[in-house]
Image 1 (cartoon, each protein chain N blue to C red):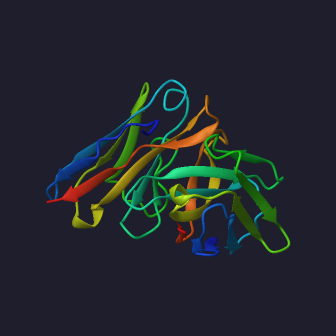
Image 2: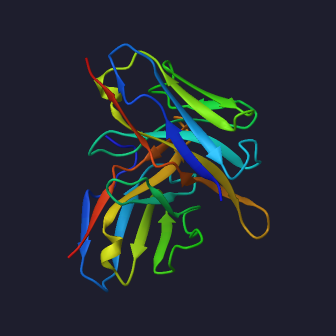
Length: 110
Length: 128
């Protein structure tokens, strides 16, 4: 069981906006920034959002991140078929002194 | 552009020691604001952080693996290594090395760190 909780699946149609939630606690999301990773099956994860709401160079602005209290969200607007992948949230855990990940959300573009 | 490449044996027997290396190219392993990390992923499952090493040589390990893990640095070869002792079938996974990089805002304040560069991963199977 992951320290951070994500829904196992999400879906949307092309052009739609979807959000993926990530729930933690006071020692994780409540006190640290959140990162999001995108993983196409069979490939290495790719950094999608860092420091809760910052995009690395090359990530389109239709991808955004936010957090409130002990929960964080990833939003993707203008959904495209290339967005179909697994998405993982991550945060540092001040109690465990370790990075923790969510269990991952599989995004399907219908 | 910094690139990472894992290497090591793909098949181990239970109780053996897993040894992997991660070669860093396009940049120095002693760069400021960068730490070097190992993450693993069992087939069909999520990501698990194993640990990291700072350019100074100090380390952080996942408490669940701490008694079996050692991460080390070889600055002369620009690589870092993972050693995991007494492996079992539960250690079967794809192992990734990654750069854990500090990020700052426009005022120079630290905003967090993240795994911004990953190796392609290497599959390690443990079976008798």
